[in-house]
Every structure is written in C-alpha cells, then in structure tokens.
Image 1 (cartoon, rainbow, N blue to C red):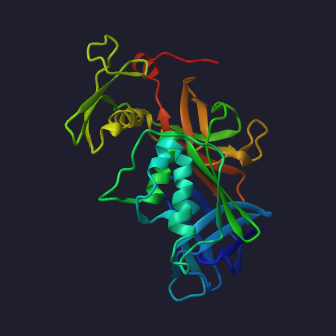
Image 2 (cartoon, one colour; image 1 turned 180 degrees about the vertical axis):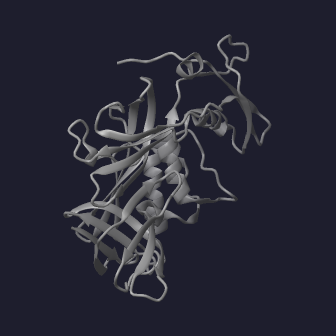
Image 3 (cartoon, rainbow, N blue to C red; image 1 turned 120 degrees about the vertical axis):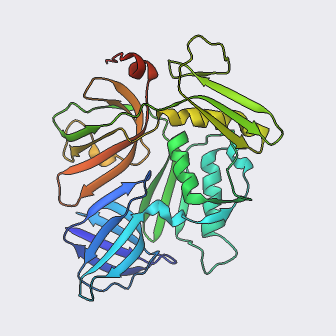
Length: 345
C-alpha cells in the first residue's frame, strides 16, 4: 500500500493522508525534475508543504510541493513535487564562508541551514523541525561564487555533491526532519551493467572536453592548467602528453580561488549523463534499497570499460519491480576514450 503524508512546511504538523494508486517518483538533482501525483480528494496542503510517500511503511520519497492544481474542476487533483533538497531553494546572503576552508564544506552547509532556515530572528518562518548532523569534515580551498554577496543555496548544495561528493540523507524521526551530511569516502562499489538484473541499458558518450583553462583574478594574476592523456593535469605548457581540445577562460575575484576554479573546470570534462538503465528492486546481486543520490560508483559498461561516476537520478513507478537509475558526471578516462583501451577487473 502506498500512502502519501502531507506535512506543514512551517511546523511539520500532519495536514493530509492519502492513499496513492499510481505515481512515478523522480529524484534527479542534475535536472531537478518534478514528481507528478494525482489524488481524488481536495488537499489542505499548499505550495511549499512537504510530502512523504511510504510504500509498505518504508519511506520511498520526500519532496516539496511545487504546484497543487485542481484538474478541470473535477474531484481529481494533480500536484507536482520536487525532491526534498528544494526546501533550501532560496537566494541568501553569504555568511561565515571561512568554515569551508578552515573546517569543512559540510560544516558550512550545516551552519547555513541553521542560520538561514531554522534559527533566524524571524521565528515565524523558522523551520525549527529540521535537525542537521555532520558526519565528515572536508576543507575545500574555494570561495562561494555570489552575485554581490547573494547566492542560491539549493544550487550550492547540489554543486557540492557533483564536485566534492557531498551527500545528504533525509529521514523523519518523530516530529523531526533529520539530515545527515557527509562526504562519500567509502570504497566505490563496481556496478556491472552486464548482469541479468539490468534492462533497458542506454549509453551515450560525450567527447567534448576542455584541454586548457585560464583563470584570471581581479589582481591580474593568471593560473593555467593543461589536460594530459591520462586524465591528470599539469601547469607545464610543453608537456609531451597534452591533448587537444577546447580552451576555457574564467574570472575570479580572489587569488586564492585560481587553482580550485581551474580544477573544477577540468573536473567538468568528465561529467555528463552517460549511462542509464533499470534494475530489479529485488536484485540479489546489488542492494537497491541502499542507493541514494550522490553515491560514487565504478561503472562497468556493456563494452567492458570501467568509469568513475556517481548516482544522479533515481526514478520508479510505484508498484513496479524495477527502478531506473542515471549516472551523471562520469569521469571519462581519456586513455580509454582516445586510445580505445579496455579496462578489466
């Protein structure tokens, strides 16, 4: 049985309980796609409220209502929801940025949630039901990119997942929404896409990449990185192992951001939605229930090439025995791609 619980965005009190007949859940942090839900009763919930979907008493989805709609004046109501991280889709002022370099990006995210969303001077709007726990501490030598001191926090935490492997585990305990923040540092599992539990396999290669990046600071200093054919980088323009490709130019305010910005651009060379497939939720080979957005994997493709990647999208039709997975930001090994070498176990 699939039950949807609708919770007030301000105090987390229960507003509606509805049994769902059919819904496709989509969690996609790269494209921020909607999950569409139809119900046969008028809801008390409004835009911004939280939806929790349980399947046989297990939480399968947490989201934020983005637009409840009455369908043609009938008794059928359709609403859309985005993944729960959209609670933090707000432009905010930058504060306490030094935490990123001195303590960890996870600690900066926790501080920002607590000081911008849960414990502000405006108690009426505080989401005091949110509790945040930091499990790892990862210093990053990179300033936050802002527009005159303002930035979108949801975009920032998604970028932290894509660039630095930071993940967010949401759970409901009592009347609290608990968030655990950590960098995925466990050894990557190898996902073999040739197993029989996997169907509808699709692989698309993206071969455009940046081979040189120049980053200039406000003071006029320039830092340049070049891509090598073993997917590493160098500052040596005359290195014999350089590869041909596009040239990128970037601008930063602080000299301290020069190197990290160049590295981030190079990291983008290896990022794209390249592999997607469906896997049986009852697979004996892989624990599908343990999957969460941002988890790192080594992906063995149908061609036998192994890629470093992370899970960027999970979608599933409730009552289906298959879940669809997309792996974005695949780190292409340029020796494999340019020289067609094969990697084996």
